[in-house]
Length: 313
Image 1 (cartoon, one colour):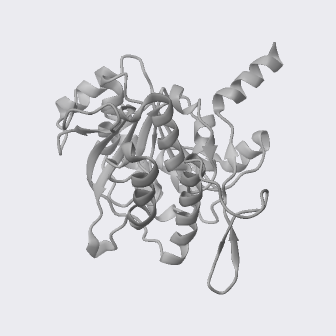
Image 2 (cartoon, helix red, strand yellow):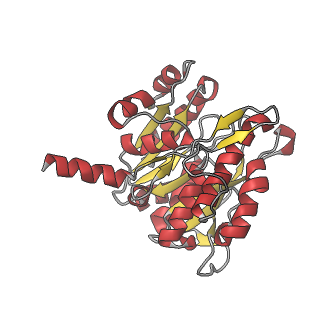
């Protein structure tokens, strides 16, 4: 069982120590620790044909075929214009198109919308999310993320922490320039998280299904804040996954992400903005152009299920 690196206070997230490299005996222990519980790995993708094949193949072989650790592997194709869906299916994933979810639940867009959709189309007791553009993925990542959830019933979510080599572009700019200052001001119990916006994390389905999902880039911070509010900050943990390499985004594209993270966190903090109400929030660039911010939400999956049950009865 992974142990917290230090005694957690009542209002702090926990960091769990795990071995840098997992031995076959470690993998066997985790498989046995599932005790009938199931694990879904969900990868939301848009135009990731160059990376998704190897990612799916290694999960399929090492965590499904060789070891019964992952029970379900889903790629959520978010309107890709390349061969993402074909490559992912050929590599062994079940591919679901976002439009299939929209046909039943109405249109949406954004990273949070894609994550919410994967929750609807998967069934595992534990849900693991991974970005589709990662080039340094190791199957140990999944095992390390789910281990605290299997061993400790008080853990609701486990985030990845990792090193992003500077020579490959580094990373974490939105975290350090936006999320961390706002966490320090409004949500200090979360400041122990090294990468609160990381795309690799795992959580219990019964916890996730009680939460609304912000559709845009604010989804990760919203989930963290809401879980901490409902279950306490110690219900959130993190584990070290080593180094992470992925596509590097320009400052121009990150500004929209930063604006949506800021708006989401201020909203959760109860900070009101100046100006008239019901006016769409935008990011105004230096040339005067305005980019609408995606702050819409999707309802808790549990509420959808409750409505469906009432309709049947």
